[in-house]
Image 1 (spheres, rainbow, N blue to C red):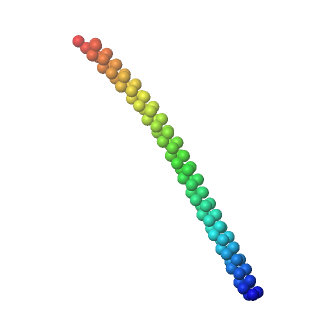
Image 2: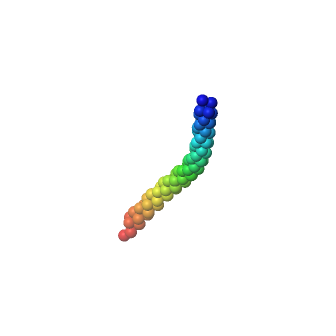
Image 3: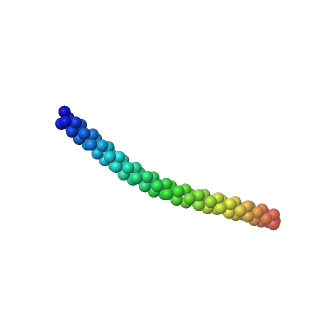
Length: 84
């Protein structure tokens, strides 16, 4: 009977040790995944900021292009009016 109790206690100890090992490995995996997610989030934030900058530049250039087009049209109309 005493031998059975010792065997059972040994199995319990081994089970507990295995659980601790699995939890430790899982915690390490979670930490690695957390770091990867953080790095990807930072990268995506930088990309979003860069895209916003490009959109602003495009909008500015479109506005300038419209102004140039209006000036060009005005110049052409002026030339057409002054031509005999």
